[in-house]
Length: 190
Image 1 (cartoon, rainbow, N blue to C red):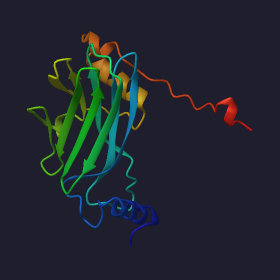
Image 2 (cartoon, rainbow, N blue to C red):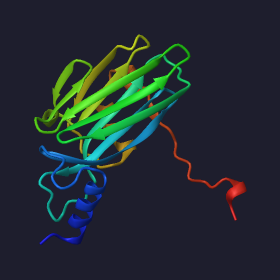
Image 3 (tube, rainbow, N blue to C red):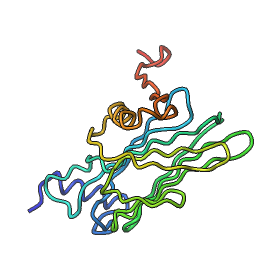
């Protein structure tokens, strides 16, 4: 018999078009969370979910992959990101808009084979769940599989772990996360 928690996760996955066995492979994605970089265009995204088949202890909050996307020497006027999870393929696209063009960084993850594809490069996710994607002003994207990190859903700890493995890279070492300000503006305060 399923626990209430497993039942609720199954219902959430079904409501998002992912339930009733729709997502297949080794892992099911339940969502992602992102945080913008400070002083540089880019963001850190943590993709979360659970192993399949789901069990009564499934929460949908297991970090499955960490992706740090950095735009080098570019000042954007805006950005967007999109993610979709199909039967056994997850796709993520990060876009930045500049006065001259749009810069796109995309990642595809075959959850059945557990392979990650980034702009012509292929990685075995089981050998490392953290990636750094660097987009040049020319639109060229380089991808680095950092290795395996286990810091939960804490974005700051994830960035620190990635930076610790890439100490000699000045681009990665030089980024920080945008501060989150939960203060309520005075005009909305009671």
